Amino acid sequence: MPQTGSLTVRVFTSQAQLPVSGATVIISSKDENGRHKVYSIQTTDSSGATQPFQLETPDRILSETPNGAAPFSDYSLVVEHPEYYLATFDKLQVFPGVETVQNVPLVPLPQPAGEDINAEPVVVTPQPL
Image 1: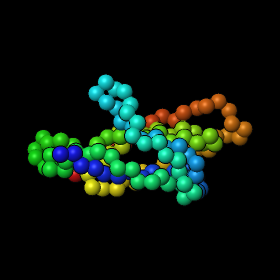
Image 2: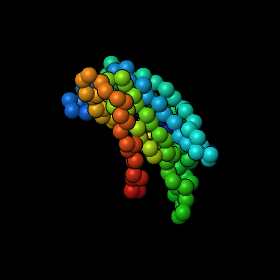
Image 3: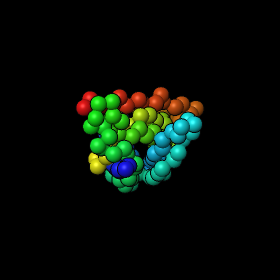
C-alpha cells in the first residue's frame, strides 16, 4: 500500500542566503512514457518557502527485504523567478513519513537581464541506508 512523504522547498539567493519570495515551484515526476506529471505548482512566501506538499511514496516495508524496492520515490523540481536563473533538480528523493526540505539557491541574472540561460539540472544522488 503506498504511503506519503512531504516536500517543502526553501528558495534563497545563492550568495547572501536571503529568502526569495514570489518564485514559482513546480513538483513533477516522469511516468513510464517519460512524460512529466505535475503534482504541484506553488509560489514561495515572504520567507522563501512553499507549503509542505504530500507526495506518494512506496510502502516502507517493501524496502526491508533483500533486493526490495527503493525506500523513496523520485521527483523533479523546477524553480523559476524572473530575476534569477532557472534551477532544476532531478531524482529528488521523498521518503515515506518524512518531511523533506529541499534548499534551492538561485543565482541572480546579470543587470540588465540578457538572454534566458538555464542552469544544468542537479541530480540528487541516493542516500546510503
